[in-house]
Amino acid sequence: MVRLITHNLLACHVKGCTSNNFPLQFKDVQVELREAEFNPDFLRGFIPRLEWGALVDAARQLGDTSLPAEPPEMLDDDFLQKLHHVLLEVHIEEGAMICPNCNHVYPISNGIPNMASAYHQPIHNVVN
Amino acid sequence: MPAATAVKAVTVSDDPQVYEDEHVHSVYDEIAPHFSSTRYKPWPIIAQFLSSLPTGWVGLDSGTGNGKYLPLPQDRPGSVWTVGLDRSRNLLEIAQNAGGIQREVVWGNVLEIPWRAGAFDYAISIATIHHLSTPARRKLAVQRLIESISPAHGRALVYVWAIEQDELSKRSIPTECSTNNPVTDSAKGKDVFVPWVLSSRSASEEKSKIPTSHDATAEANKVFNRYYHMFAQGELRQLVEEAARDLGLLIGSAGEGKGGDGDVPVRGLEIAQDGWERSNYFVEVRRWQSIS
Ligand SMILES: [Zn+2]
Image (cartoon, protein in one colour):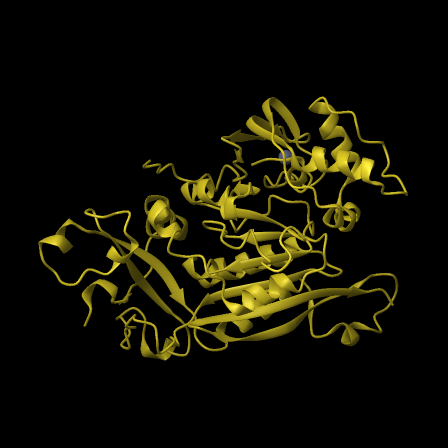
């Protein structure tokens, strides 16, 4: 699953790529919306951990402009609902994320991002 | 001597990554659907660790497997958010829906760090580092875990298999060392294969993992040997301390870091607890920094 809560944590880690390697840019993504349980207490505690600007940009790339440029001082339910939706209800199912610095491509398939670098590419041994 | 559950001493050969691909990752990819339903009960130390976290924290489960820890804590579900990382794609397909709710999982390697540095408040590494086949790789995995958590307040729990097994464990551990693992090394851990027996007759029945005898049925079973490094007493704590020192961290509590000079923060790592629980060793650490 790649939701924006995870996208906000991911960074390019190709050897030598240490600056401007966050946030990864979406490319050719397929998005699905799915309801998730609203947990305002979690969100209030979680907000200081976010890279807010990166979250707002990522949401706009996906066509959601509901978030303000800065987090508001008053965390009312209306705002928390919008944040909840952006963070936890928008699923990127297919597509890729691209490093803004070195252009490394991290593919997303079936909702799972492949974040292994070229050296550590997993072997393909799918039996199902 | 129960043939099917016997643990065999082995010598790691080849490139360690190739070795682990063959004897760890490809095994888990194949046994994933059968492996998953037999393992779900969290050990007390792990459950307590995850219950003790403040609401709103975000964490990493490095080597999440089937994602059985992603729904925790049981007493406050949803109060923290754990992201799962694993190298077995088939296990991640299961982890994606651990506990019947959609989870966040990432396909990757525990020796890499595909995150913003220090992005997580906490991290757990449960039954993962013992699948790495050299001391250097095990240390690197611990370093990646430490680097993933906040330098100011990050907490991490590492849990590995112990040579010292619970009396209730049905496994027999080889006492003699292989020729390439001389007796002088006996204070350290052991490299072993732990078999996983998959019955072709009843792949959906988990009890089939221990066949009764070597008969025609057993022949139809498929045996997968998983590589483990079984840790000796004190080995995990030493590994964690070495990993932290190599990252330039002081070992000790935050108070001991006072009195540095200038504006450079003094960074350290405290061993909050370590011990043995049900055939496993664990170490819990806390990062801290102080600007004098
Ligand atoms: Zn890059």
